[in-house]
Each structure stands twice: as structure tokens, then as C-alpha cells.
Image 1 (cartoon, rainbow, N blue to C red):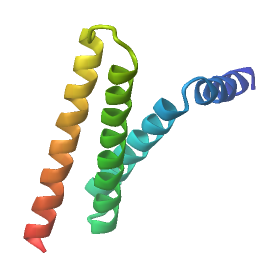
Image 2: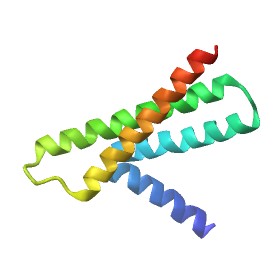
Image 3: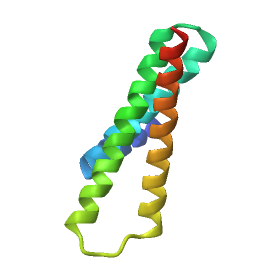
Image 4: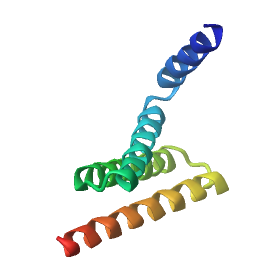
Length: 105
């Protein structure tokens, strides 16, 4: 019971500390779940929903990083570059998935 209480408190604290990052984490977690369900149940609804979550989270990450770059005059860090590169990679893969899905329909 203590472990469950600690997990719930951690989720609440992280959602209060940085809400955009928490929502992005939630969207990517749901995308992983939906894309995992797609491998078991071949239904297009799960695939479309999972890819939509990935597109939304990727765009949210890119916008958040862009705003933080403009707001601060600090030079870009390697972590920021890796985050942007990963978001662009996820966005490209999901757009390719949508294009492949439209082509096969």
C-alpha cells in the first residue's frame, strides 16, 4: 500500500511540476499501448489513434523546445538538440505511417 501511495504522489508531483512534459509522457505512453494493441488486434482504429498520439506529442515537444529556446538567451544544450531530434524522428515515422495507411486503404 505504501508503494502505491508513493507512486500516486510521484505522478501528482510530476504533473504539478511540469504539466506539458507530463501530458507528453502520457500521450506517448498511450501511443505505445495503442500501437502494442495494434500488433495483437489488427484493427485500424488503434493504429490511427496511436499515430495521432505520437504526432500530437511530437509537435508539443517541438513547440515547447522552440519556446524555451526563444525565451532564454542560453546557447542550445546537447540535451535540447537530442530532444528535438527525437521528436522530429517520431514525427517523421508517424507521418510515414499515416501515408502508408492511406496508401493501403
